[in-house]
Amino acid sequence: MYLYHFLASILSFIIYWIIRDRYKVRNLNGKHVFITGCDTGLGNSLAKWLDKKGFCVIAACATEKGSQELQCCSSLLLKTVNLNLADFNSIARAVVFVTEQTAGKGLFALVSNAEGTAPVGPTDWLRIEDFHSVLDVSLLGLIEIILKLLPLLKKAEGRVINLINAKGLMAFVGGGYSLSKWGMEAFSDTLRIEMQHFGVKVSIVEHGFFKAEEVNSDIIEKYLFKLWNRLTPEIRDSYGEKYLVESQRSLVKRLCDYDISNVIKCMEHALIAKYPRTRYRAGWDAKFFWLFLSYAPSCLSDMLLRIPFPAPAESRRPVHGVLMNV
Image (cartoon, rainbow, N blue to C red; front, side):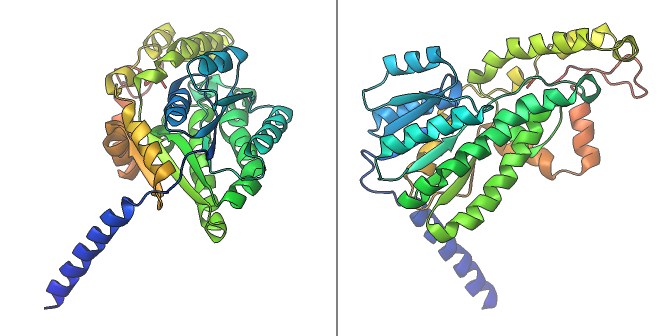
């Protein structure tokens, strides 16, 4: 009898959750959505999609070229603003622009997206400024713009959607990239709990590797050579030139999901659902591979991540493979 009631309760909860998950916000036309990182990739795709759906999109681009190209293929409702997340003055100007565009209505949604990946490489190849160059954009810059726009979000009882690569689930390469993703995970969790009192919803979309991210490959190779050329002879000898060559091969392309629509679907639900989920996982690698590694015992995850990495010339643990390019 008790087992029957228990199973009935579980089934009732599942049915309730499915029905609740399908409720949508009404009257979405004309609502303002601010998106960062719209020059290319996921931010660019989302801006175009929301523009077609009738949202008043405010797209932040890092370059004038990115702004012009986005405006050329969008409606007049879409507005662009130049934004350098490493420059607090640029952030302040963008906040003023968003405030003027919303005209006292508040901001319905803020989608934070920044993919400042390079430089990445072995930790002893890096200097502290290499960490700053990534963290200032992909962590501190995003936090700054969110903090500045919180009053507008609270006014509209809006929502914050933070796009975070699944690499935030598992750190496996040196540099500030994984640090920034772990930092945004923690910031999102605390923000969600605190903003519930004001009707502001906070969601995380953890996405895997997508073909759209391959544009970063040339940049990463460039930085690898830059890092290599400034190493001391002792460090170069300890790794060997073979390590550098193999580090340029990309295992990520083998793991890559070519269907970017998986991310768009998650962001769509986070934007229009009356009760958005706390976390979304888009891409098979985000749902299975990285999630599994994040919960696996360290000895197992370390072993699995070591397999595809090249071994330094002076390694005391011979491992053969290629470096995961991010």
